[in-house]
Image 1 (cartoon, helix red, strand yellow):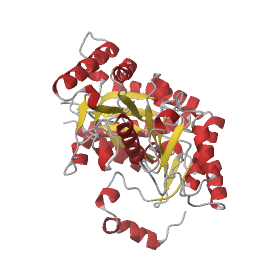
Image 2 (image 1 turned 30 degrees about the vertical axis):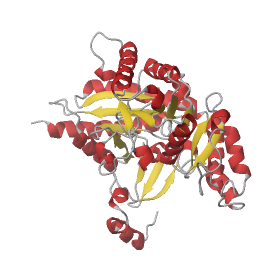
Image 3 (image 1 turned 60 degrees about the vertical axis):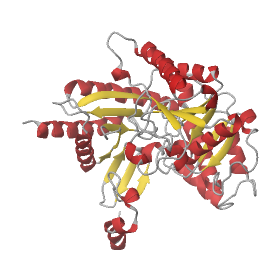
Length: 439
């Protein structure tokens, strides 16, 4: 594949053209094309993608049916705005989403990004309850606009100089690895959640002032941490006890990533409000705040709005994506390939002292890396591993408070041969880094 010199010159000047917060992320790989589970680099190499554009391309890059749907919609409409006009794709999408979301969560406010869906969820909860405060959990990430940032705590750097002027409260998120000896994780963390809420309500805030509790049913950017099922169920019980609305941030866990349409179904816990995005539209900007019709009707005209949300092209892509996921049975594939990958990774863990933990659900898998001597989280080692893997043609991403977790989130179309190839390269990179660290 040919690459023009002018394009390569622009790549070299990206530090001048783009803000550092946009141009400096790992690995900043120049690409000219994407297809299926692969990126095609400006260097002429083909890269196996285990990132899905950060859990977005669940049906694979540029699926032919999605591309065809976008082209067909572009022949009719490029822009809404919904409300000023109304068009078929947005109504069809709402109808189809209502068939896969939990129970009566079938009314939608469409926006463009995950953080917008979170903003909408918090605004809805505050408006409906007429209560001022929000509770979230340490280590969770909900976005970087001011409202969503007020409940994001995966890294302190995201909030530096940007602390919101209103109060939010944070409680610990369960990490099964930190369960005391001789304690069952399900029991320990559920009971601890009761204690944490009791302490919060006793010393800092009255429950009748709390509009909502927002949580990632599986932590994403904070480290791909999977909570005990009973913990989430207890959270639902506590919210019901005090008439507090429960919001699930399903931006990363939605659309088959955990092996069901949504993590709410994976864990058997229904929230009052959901925020969905990422995998919804195969890479086009789209998100939604989701609630029951009864709840949404309490949020009248003018209390929230959008110009670009529910764009016709994005809605068409989402409809095509949902159809592909059903036709190609991608939920089942996520379960099967996720189980297969976890087995291989846990076998790998037994061989390498730098692998502290392997955890995941569906095709949402985290590999936690530590210093083999000190046992401390080792973000530097993670970057070395990722760079080596990239040199061998496989793209992984990182997460965790110290960047200590390798995030494995391939398209849900991934097959066994591709998983074998990706994990072979990963093991070679881990081996090389362990050898280099030996005295």
